[in-house]
Image 1 (cartoon, helix red, strand yellow):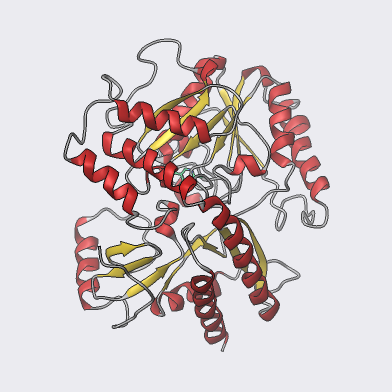
Image 2 (tube, rainbow, N blue to C red; image 1 turned 45 degrees about the horizontal axis):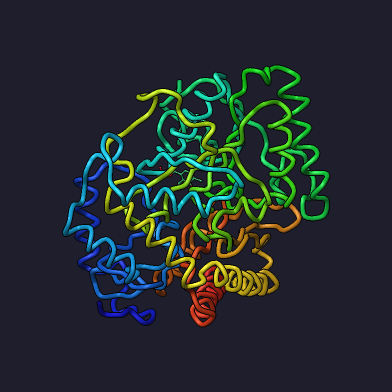
Length: 448
Ligand SMILES: Cc1ncc(COP(=O)(O)O)c(C=O)c1O
């Protein structure tokens, strides 16, 4: 495999071949959520080469699906070996060792000092659907609590919890009934008008109070609430990091009311925050964890992982066809091994700190950057027109992404006006410096 070693823009992207493919995409594919006109040909570590021969540094990691970097040799070898034996066999109806190995390895790295069981799915949304069924079946309750600003996927159950953009819902009501939304403790912008960086405890207390007094004690009977579903850090909603004690207070409230806590770690999982799961940073052991994206390094896979006592008590309460597919299973086990052996969590923490420092330097330089936030290699910068108003500068954010793309850096938005910076866990200081130079130059040019 030929290495890709650095940014190399040969022709302004999208180049002529890319443009043709984009035209065909528009003709044959359903309209979805396209963000950048990058047409990929191959990848290597932190880089993507497009069809016109341009090489980009990728600070999107395929939207956090390839945390260990593109074309990891050990994952490739594991998948290749499996490919030549058998690439699919119905794992929910029959048996094979690769799926058992993946479930065991996953359970071992998942927080919680109890035995775990795994239901394998094929995506984040499907993992959340499974988590909801586990909670409903175990508790025999029907209602749920979700958070404003959340993203949990687009199938009708997961969608009922998703609350980050009206367009996600328009045309689709009614979705799964029984989900009540409450405010998320966003330290930078919240409905309580509390500065959550200055007063984190007040923000947490007000949020917990809202759930307890103004929801459970006002109109939502706790004895009919199966679970609270929450992202440890809101991803799509803007990379919102709540105060450090929030999730501990939340699980306490949940358990006092016999409510389960489902942590959606689809975006935060697999080393992204410097921990295998962000729940570890927040020091909580969720009852159920949903995971997907990077779990099999980009081979479609998701999982709902839970305390074994919540397991389905009858055959047929849940199943699927492709969950725990052989290629995905071996990729999942190899991914876990790679993260451990190559000490990627350590690098995620170390490089995360460095990235955060460099982003704060940009904030010192540009008034238009209102906030820098994140954990590990899950960082964001938020653009404002006016720091005191903390309003959304969507235009500048979009232009910075576009200009950075032309200069060989792939970036993705989050929330109204933030850019997420999610390089692979193997990123180096030098690559971060290269990315910062491009972002700096892009902001500078766009402000002129
Ligand atoms: C936190 C979270 N949950 C669920 C999902 C949905 O995952 P998928 O697109 O694989 O269904 C996403 C996707 O971005 C996510 O970020």
